[in-house]
Image (cartoon, rainbow, N blue to C red; front, side, top):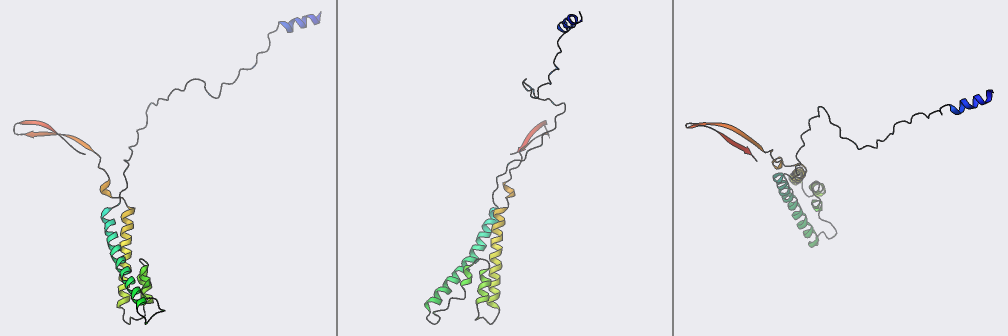
Length: 176
């Protein structure tokens, strides 16, 4: 008697319901955009400015360096031709071949030149080095730094009241 009652109770009882499944990690619904109550103000973007070299400084650098180095090259070439054409020094190279090297060449030529008892030649070679270095520096700075005049001005418009002998009005102006 006890067994049929136990079986009837087990069969009539509700089956144990499985635990509820956790919510999905990824939503299957379409994403809705977030609306902020107080949106942050947008930062003003800088205008894209094309980098243009400083023309005046670049041209001056090319002129100064080109003139001083060109003069050094001319003197070195003439000295080299003279040393090869004169049979007195057939095995000796010209002492001014250092002038073929830009910027430090005059210092090399001054150290190789032995026929000058006074310091005039050495002084001239140091001056030539300084002028070549200054011209090359001007050229590099002119190419590296942007020209401030190439930065476009921000266009502005204004409205101003105008008063005259026959009445008042408004004038519109601006910069573009």
